Length: 135
Image (cartoon, rainbow, N blue to C red; front, side, top):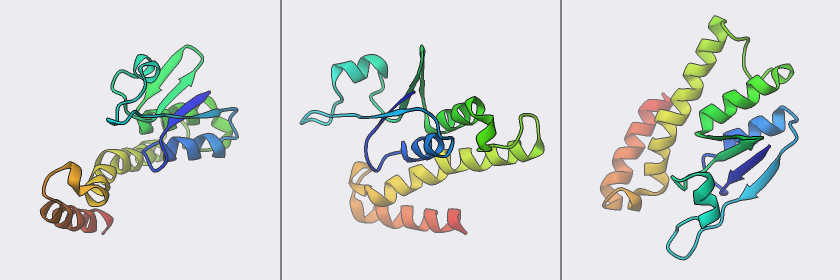
C-alpha cells in the first residue's frame, strides 16, 4: 500500500491506522508547486488533488474515513474496528464519520481562517462551533 500525504493534513488518521495494523505501506509526500497545485502525476492519481490518497494494488481510494475502514477490513486481526454487522461497529463508524465530516472541517476553519473569509470573524465562529462539538 502507498499512502499519499501532506504533513498536518487529514492523512494522519489513515497513517495511524496503517501503523496500528502493522500493514506493509509506503508514505509518499505530495508536493505542490508555487501556486499550491499538486504535480500532474498526483492529479492523474487523484483529480481533486486533495489528500490523502491510498493505493492498494489497482485500488485508488480517497477520503480519510474510507481509507481507515479499508485498512481495518484488510487487517481484521488488528482490531481497528469492531466486527462487521455489530452494533459496536456501527457506533464506531458514527464517531469516525463525525470526526472526519464534522469536527475536522470546523478545525480547519479554526487553524486556517484566512481560507474562508475575514480571519477574525471566521475564527471566532469556528472556535465557538468547535467548543460545542467537543462538549
